[in-house]
Length: 144
Image 1: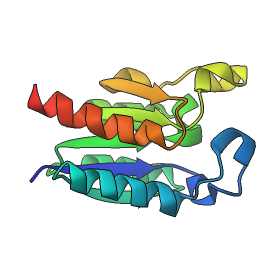
Image 2: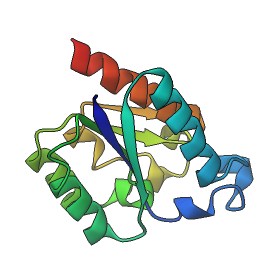
Image 3: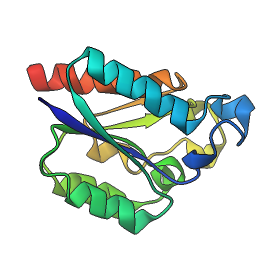
Image 4: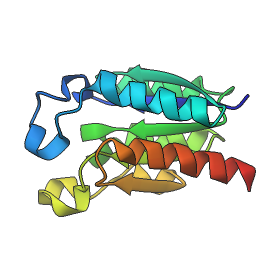
């Protein structure tokens, strides 16, 4: 059975209460439940982790050798973490970057992703469904 890692970055533990007009009212727990249901439908397994710490996210990437792919929402680290970019580049797993909001339609500092260039793709702007799309994209990528 294929196994995928989902990494939620900083402040995503506050979903549902943090700027719901931007990020929606769905909580992280609800997003994870939706992801797990979709994974079960597609006969894949998910490990899901949320971290507010850059170093922990890097360690998760480094230790994901047994994963068939990774979905990452680096959150604020998207815009400045060369360290996460380098960690993604250093591993062989396919990685897709996701965002709940359309980062290209936000403040200027949010429009640039330094981490996306290390990924096989980026999905943003579809709320929680960005994660579902990324899961399907990874499954498809691995079947190609």
